[in-house]
Length: 411
Image (cartoon, rainbow, N blue to C red):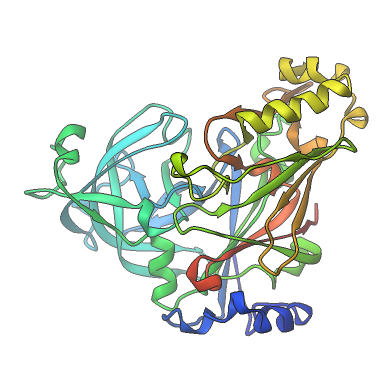
């Protein structure tokens, strides 16, 4: 792993508009120390069926843990099968327990300890006393094939926990018992890292796939199955992107909530997306989520998008969702265009190529899988969108809500 440093977070061309626009006026007033350190963490999609993971090192013995990297959650949790806090001289036990479930129905129950978390083994960046959940009950699919855990990169209000009558390690509280505890909130790892002045309040993803490319016997060695998480930076990583950034406004500090305005299939008429209703209690109609390896459109939007594909004679393949590559002519498939509300007054226009919403050689060589779905609630703009763009989550601006910035990725 390499550690880069920079004294400026923005290319010169971006400094003037960012500093003069009102959305950035609160950046200096957010508190915390400012650091010029950035960490480029290698990540891979092989261990978690397309979702990306990177390595952290837990406790005084620096136990190596592969954590799924998720902007759709906020908790740092590690599998208790691989890390034992009772054998960690840096660990402090607490009375706090957590139980967390995810949209794919995976879940875990665990106890919170405070311990050292290290990233970047070559030039270690150590943060002591990090609230870390040690999962002692988990569904089988929770941590994939990794020596695992999950690192949530969203905001504090997603990181709720429960104070119990006694220590939560060793494990003895059940799911129902934890639910009866006193509710509290834990500051997420990345927020603690930034507050300590170790990195700036932003991070970025470089990814090329949303499912594992299975063309080789060792997919972990295939460059397109690997990428980077940049902690503390983004725009200075000029070898990972090209062109200017587009900045989407984040409208709520739970997930990375954005306003999706329209979806266009090729050259067909745009599908207009309505704001969320009051009854839905959703703060926005879309979320940018690194922990989802598909694009999920709200049902009414998906219905209209599907009609556009039908007009192009492509709806049979959409319904199939899985084809031999010999029957998939990607040249005949249109680009999907997503328009988001911008942070600087103009809309953000993002293109998703057929090569990313169809994942070739997945889940096996010679076949292709469609990673474009429908669901209830806000649309989820997952990895297939991010695979087209170097994506920066800058939480230091917009009164702490942040912006999500997109620049064309360099393959």
